[in-house]
Image 1 (cartoon, rainbow, N blue to C red):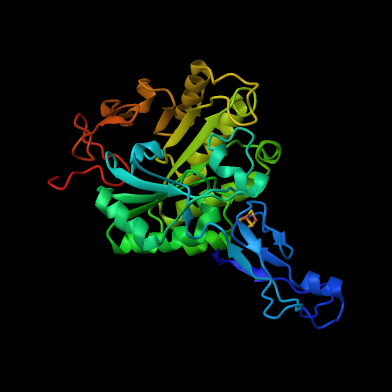
Image 2 (spheres, rainbow, N blue to C red):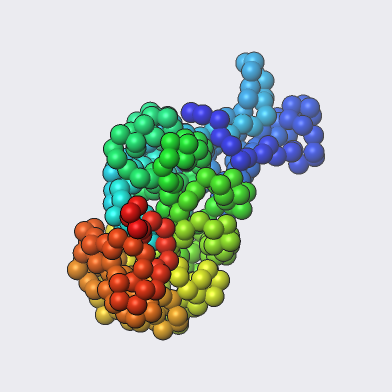
Length: 368
Ligand code: SF4
């Protein structure tokens, strides 16, 4: 358990500091803290955790019987639950250092509670069962392993990196110092304060845009759409390489009007070159009453995205589909071919047929 960052103690209802009133209720009230890591801004009483289940308020009581002021700790600051060496395309990032490997890790826990979570065995145990498992680690150890593995980058992923902010930040600093790029794969529900802290630590991100209605975010994820849109706009402004993913769930977020609204938002507010990954849903966690997304639905969504002017729309969880590959938006020629995680890449960022330059980072091999 390590000290958490980005939180503040809350004053008592009367404004008195904790322990000054002599009232037990006021003292307990004075031990509350507010976590400022994500847009839930949880107010956490003494002895309790926030909604993610991995940030706990343990009041700073030095003497037996004393009521201290609140103090927030993280249960996942040195505790990884999943580590793998992945193709960067698996994040998915198709236009950032293509063809390279990324050292990927995550802890347990998540600040959202999506009914369709595809990683529920990692994300749910802290908030549902109070269980936080993992292996002790340090940023230096993670970066040393990443370097030894031959990875070109470190990815903060699998569950939700916002809730392991301290480990992500310190590892990002160490990774950049060691010449590795940094990638965040996230639901985009960070607070603006959290994003500001990350601005100069992250190089690329894939952010979920899970739907385009507040109702979906409230009913299916226990969250809100508006902060996610703010995150997406902020990342585009900060200049990280950005790609967006939407998991298409039959009957919940796959209507043509909603998809058109999403595509217009990406095009108008993030830019036409931001890749949009449309991913196939498979029944998971609590959402087992729906079929996998029909391929025709994904193809219709692809048409909508391209029709709204997005230059790079991809289909995910559809191995072998032509829409996994990158085509030149200027002349239509095949530029980068993908089959699952097998990639056949060009050696330059220029289209061999028409010479157009492909947006992204790292298309060119060193001799080009
Ligand atoms: S990270 Fe979010 S969910 Fe977790 S305690 Fe902080 S505000 Fe609450």
